[in-house]
Each structure stands twice: as C-alpha cells, then as structure tokens.
Length: 134
Length: 191
Image 1 (cartoon, each protein chain N blue to C red):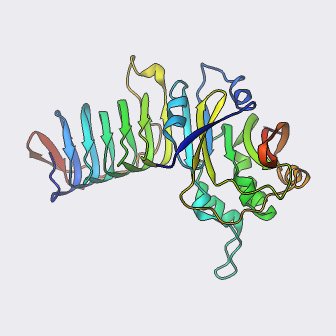
Image 2 (image 1 turned 30 degrees about the horizontal axis):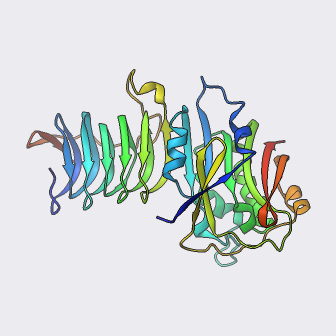
C-alpha cells in the first residue's frame, strides 16, 4: 500500500496488487495485477494493470487489461482503454472510453494513443515494487 | 446522484441499426458520462468521447482578449486529429446555443464526421416550450435515461424548426418525433 501521507514521483512497477491512498505522479505499471486508488488517493499518472479500481482521483490515461471500475467516489480525467468499464452512480468521468468486449476473454487491451513520453531512469526497490524516478 | 427516470425513444434504435458489429463504433456524447450509458455501450466495440460543454455555457465571443466561439469550442472539444464519429449524441445542446454558437460548434465538429454519421438531438416544436432541466443517457435501445440537473445551464433559447434546420450545416433532419411539452426528438444524418 502507498499510504495517505506518501508522495511518489516516478514510475511504480511490480508484481503484486497495489492500493494507493497517497499521491503518485508519473506512471504506474502493474500489468498482471490490480491497482486500487483509495478515496484519499490522488494519481497524476498513466496506469496500466490487469484490474483498476478507482475510488479517488486520477488524471491520466488508464489501460486495464481486464476491466476498469470507477466507483461512486471516483473522479477520472483521462482516456480509458479496457475490455470492460464500469461507472458507478455518482462517479465523475471526463475523457474517452475505448471498449472491446471481445477482448475480455481473449487478450489484452492496448492503448492506441496518449502515451506521453516519460524518461527512463534507475528503478528504486521498495516493498516488492519498483519505483523509477523521472 | 440526481434521480433517474426513463423516456421512450422511437429514434434511438435508428442510430444503431446500421452498425457493423465487426467494426468499432466511435461516439460523441455531449454531456456527463452516466453509468447506464457506459453499460449500454459495453456490448459494442466502441470508443466513447464524453464531453460536457454545459458547464461552459453560454458560449459567446469575447472581445478582450479576442476569442471566437469556434476557438472556445475547439478548446472544449479537443478531438484527436484522426477521430471520425459514427454517432453523435447532442441531446438538448442546440437549445442552449445561439445561432453563431451552433455554426461555430459544427465548424469544429464537421471535419470529424464521416459519410453516414448519425446524430440524435432534442429541439422544440414551439419556441415557448419550457426548459427541461434534464440530462440524458441511454438505458437500452428503446429508452433514454433522464436525470435532473443540479445546476441549471444558462442560455436556454430554443430555435424554431426552420431556424435550426438551416443552422445544422453538415446534417439534415432525417426524422423527427413530436414529444410532450412541444419538444421534438430528431434523427440527423450527415448531409
């Protein structure tokens, strides 16, 4: 978990599920796992994960290989690519949603565009996650 | 969240009957993204662009600094260059834009239409038709979802049918259906 008082600027990668209650700026890449953004979470980053659940605030492009869920407290400004997207009553969303239900059981969704350049840098290991500064 | 009701739509099915299931459909939805709309489209290969211009109303030209209505719409809409819409869901947008604003809006949209693009809009049969403080989504193929707005958009000044038809450069009215309260539901086809 990234706690409420934690601020990360850089790239977060790893092979375990992640709950973000704090602030992340940069990129989150957990391709085979779930990323949850808690109600206090603020993410200014592109996110790639298997499942992405948003209860907090996200500004950035979102690529969910399986599904993306924006909960009633969620607020998203960006473009979503996922086989399935669920918007709960009360959720705030501004942007585009690219869905393909046929991909749900056959493979991964891909982000066609909106891939802003991020500089590669040295990864920092922390609790099973790689944090790359930008 | 504002309360939810539904409204039957005779024209909504026409938007979808020509769609090729093998091809992704690109949709412009003017207004807030609603759960039922996203759920409805989850059965389609699609790309949905949700753009809520209502909070920015009224769209009027500024003299200082000089900003045209078209520039304001370009900034609001920000369509990716390659985007071409199969379906546009305008809902009641045109009832809140003056003639110049409609012209400006369509000048920004037109390059992103394709042959056969279809659109849905509400207008009025009588300009005295009262303002409906609602926003819309898709419940199912024959029903719209209708929710009450918390904040009333400014600039309600509906156009007569003749005026609106003349202003819709790039579209022609394919069908229209008279609704209660002197409102009209319109199916538009790129001309």
